[in-house]
Length: 258
Image (cartoon, rainbow, N blue to C red):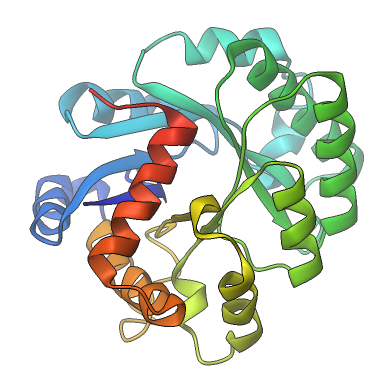
């Protein structure tokens, strides 16, 4: 069994062909899908999807790119949104993106901390997006964990080996996307090789980042098998055994799914 820990099923082209997308996922042993919120509008679509499909779960959060439009978002509103459905099992995606700087950095940090406060209160995993912001991401997570511990999943990790191990020391889980299969990603592959297997999850981030040999095509959950196979080969483990490990890690982080 494989679990896609991060996808955007409310995005096209998947949203209008969701039955087929799910069928293809199941045929590749991808049993559960976690659809990740980026805006209030995407969250409303996720709520509709998780009500309709038994094996799909959701999260609530505001992507760092979008924080300029949510400058007044607070922990109370985040908690209120999450309580709309018991199948909302995580908070995010949230975090910092200083690569594109589509929102002011101060606003990104402010909203990131509001998400963290909600995670501390609800004891739900925080799904973190971080790009070109390693030092700030680490310092915020470390400082907030000292106040009150909370669960963290770093999604689509593409950062440095030093950053990865600092995150592991904080107790974070780290997720691999199709990026790890790219030919230019040898350093990233080496980083994942150095990480403990019990801290790794897998994801597609679909419809983005389709893995080799499907790079350039629209991504979907069924494509995750290529990422799993790549990592299993990297780790010198049977693919089935590795997928079972990542699923176990998912359940340890998010809890058992009904």
